[in-house]
Length: 244
Image (cartoon, rainbow, N blue to C red; front, side, top):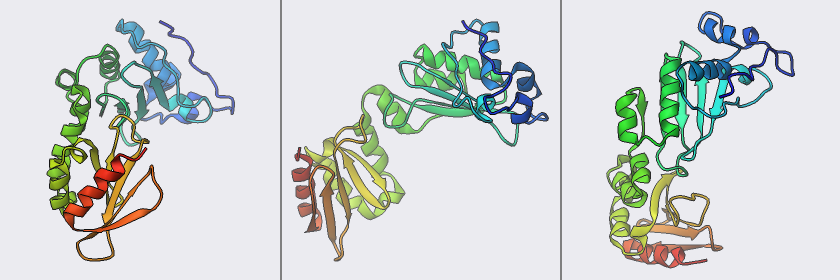
């Protein structure tokens, strides 16, 4: 494992002492920054963290960030600004199977968690071993390979979705729309065709200008449809979900 690579000074002239709070992170100043300290801990603990880089080699981030790669999703480590702690995020929402985040004051514990993530330790075991971690319920759905039913369960019990409750129940019961991935964004209901690619086609449902009416549109088709009632809305979503 490469335990070198620490920067004494960034291209724009910053040193670890310039970038780091000496009261909170004297150990990181001595090590040469967060990434360098993480390399040293990994070496001492015999952990395989692969290549440890920084978010940017210019400015403070050269000494205050670390990023690592893994087959199940990239990892990032940042420093707490008000206390000595290391904030970790692993995986990307709606992209990687399961994602977690959390913070710990112990860099060695952070390194062990990162190593466990890289080796594929599952979410339940990972959070049992590292209680500072947490993850949203949908993460478990992605890890289990069941993101759509997991997301429906979340949305159907979400108080913020109350205004769409009856419509959501009908959409969930439909054999076509019940297979889409529902979520709320900007006070509108969105149903994605592919839960692993949130940039793929989706159908958007928003409240219409009349009571009981909805505006239904698709990212894969031009224009929108004004419909009334739950039945018409479900039919519109069904139809638009099939558009190429």
